[in-house]
Amino acid sequence: MTLEIPAGTMKKIHLQGEQAYPEEGAGLLLGKLDGDRKRVVSVVLLDNQREENARRNRYLLGPGDYLLGEEEASRLGLEVLGVFHSHPDHPNLPSDFDRDWAWPVFTYLITSVWSGKAGESRAWRLVEDRSGFAEEPVAIVDP
Amino acid sequence: MPKIRIPSPLRTYTDGQAEVEVHGGTVAEALEGFMSQYPALRQHMFNGQGDLRPFVNLFLNNEDIRHLEGLDTSLQDNDRLMIVPSIAGGRGKDLPAVDHSALRTNQAFIIGLSILAFVFYAPWLAGLVAVAMAIGTILGVPGFGFIYKGLLKPRGWVRPDILHDNPEPHRFAQGLGVVFLAAGVLALFAGFPLLGWSLVWLVIALAALNLFVGFCAGCAVYYWLNRLRVPGFVKSPPDQTFPGMRPKAKA
Figure 1 (cartoon, rainbow over the protein chains, first blue to last red):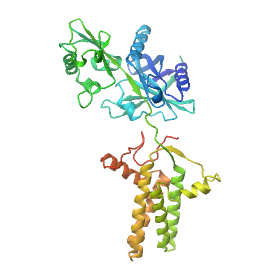
Figure 2 (figure 1 turned 90 degrees about the vertical axis):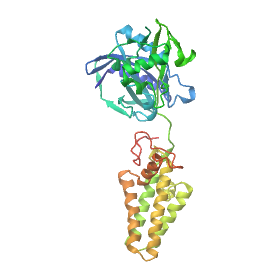
Figure 3 (figure 1 turned 45 degrees about the vertical axis):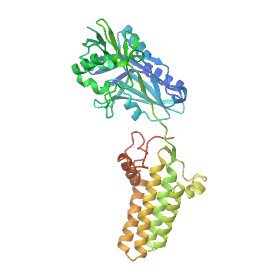
Figure 4 (figure 1 turned 180 degrees about the vertical axis):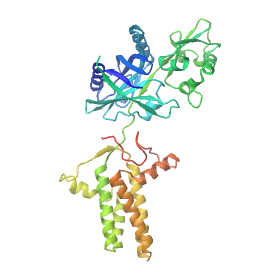
């Protein structure tokens, strides 16, 4: 399934990754799922809840963050489609750690941030048997 | 009847329902009933040992059950149990920086000198290559890495190619090369030229595979031993890297 993201929203995600650098930044993707279209409409930018010395290679959004996202989503008539996070100076591929912690169905959008500058983002979804991720193509759309 | 509130990633498994009614006097019983109703959910909620996965939080009327009596917390008729995700991940640990230009210089010298040894029928030269590689293995550096470090890199003739990688498999691979090459040289001196040169050419071929294709056969052996949990082979391949292939992550 292709993940559609408005250019401005992608810019917000990249900016947050750059601002969090050299730590990982993260947040939630809100949007709509119609048939086989997955459209991101809005994002919730969140603080990385990991302890300070782990934030360079780990992120955590707690239950309170998720509830905040769900509240915002229902206010806008949307649903939580997934998560975005940055990989500072690292490829935008999911790590084993990403897999161990992944929720099914969710889209995991990963952005590489090289020396403080956001690069390309790629989207992934956990396969049903939890053995790995399948890539979801990303389409940048006009808002 | 108590109700369970389902977070969006799990609603695919509950036919889109955000809330379902459950039976059970405790959280554990309610979850068991819920799992038997939607069995595909189990692997995502529980790990192989049957424990709740660490990213699954359960809230009973807005209180984390970890602060109540955990899975033994009792449920009343009007209770609302919420499954709330924690979301975590990240790129994981950084592997050490390994300069692949030093490794490639090493491979190029191993190939070049070994071919010269064959062309000029000079087993002593192949022996010298084996000695350089053995010293490198003992010191934990590429045997001919000193040429890169002392000459090629300072003059800018070869640029560094620093990747996040495990150094141990490369050291093991070089050690394996020493064994084959030394066996070949011994065979040559012992009067078995076919066996001797075959072993020398095996080392040349594997070094060339590494230099030109980026596949380190000795590293693949190392990672294979790691998968078999052989003691001492503790490092697993870098993320998203086929065992033995050059990793993609620039340091």
